[in-house]
Amino acid sequence: MVDVDIEIKFNEKDLVPVIAQDAETKEVLMLAYANEQAIRKTIETGYAHYWSRSRNCLWKKGETSGNTQRVLSIFIDCDGDALIYLVNQKGNACHTGKRTCFYRVLWG
Image (tube, rainbow, N blue to C red):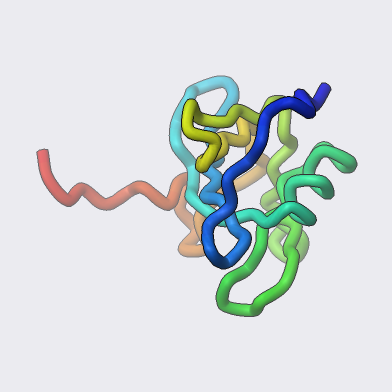
């Protein structure tokens, strides 16, 4: 169900950051961006769609790799300028072949 009273605040490029988080483990898998079209497609299909900033097009996560994300819920932050897709991840989330894009430690 979509709450039509919640307004998403897109940035100057009409994008909003989206964190994909594993529904079971709560592990943060990746960060990507979505425009309104990607969010609508995600809700319509139940699979994560994003906006590719490098290719300048809509993409379904796992379309070529098979590493899809089944979206169970979408959360929006208190400011309305960031989303979380709570997902069931099939395969790895990162294009490097790692489970998550957040595998490198910067500090701590």
